[in-house]
Length: 361
Image 1 (tube, helix red, strand yellow):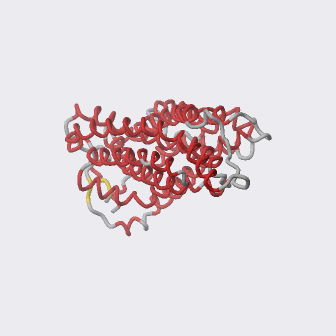
Image 2: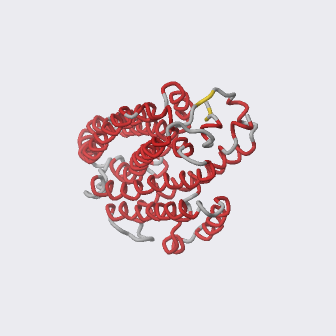
Image 3: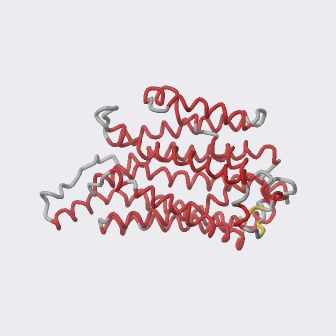
């Protein structure tokens, strides 16, 4: 299922007075899934210590989380085509809430696979919401300003990812990273110790679940707005998309961009705790992750304004050339802000990938 060109490119709109509220609803959804996504950065150090995992093992958290994007994206598009975007957003928010609620039994059981299941369900809801959020931003105005709107929407995502690490560090990492010694503790004592360590996950995710349920109810109450303001969906041949070189190149670009962005954010807390870097406590390291995402937020808010006047492709190219300077250079990373360089990548790439897509078939 792919967006209808007339709607998604801004050629025709319904009631103009509803475009703004619909766009703000999309921004709220972007904030929600950004907040939930970045909490994985705080979860990783705690899970690594609680279950004595290697870096490869603990990165299964990200594999399960972002694997849901790969598996659920097409079913999410089908869902939105059947029930509409805002109804789909409501369903996605409820699924996110269900994933958050599953952290409680996972913590009570004290088993690592339980957390992986909760993260996969949470990420499935995130995927459903994100599939809708981008077209809502794209279709809510003139097509030539779509990159600016997408960048502004992603700025709200970055606002969430700036606040999220501080929230996660305060709730999840505030008690430090005690590592139960599996070599000295009996099996029963080890299981008890892990359950005790895992209890820190319950309260923050119960709070998040409550907020997500409220947001889902609000989206359901305004579900009729989508008929007028959101892009419609038409049936298309998915196999034919593989022959679209613009789309394939864009998909590879977004893959590389998101891979770099996620890897940096996920590894940063553990990296900053190393004796060879900053050697800071877990809560401090978790809080410092917000600087990376905060710089991305600043870049996106500034970029949204700049790209109303400047060529988005030129802005993206300049930032990509600048980001090459940070490769292997931690001092350059800290001084110049790699997060700022990554700021406008996804929204500009998304707009370029979808440009004239339906007209090309």
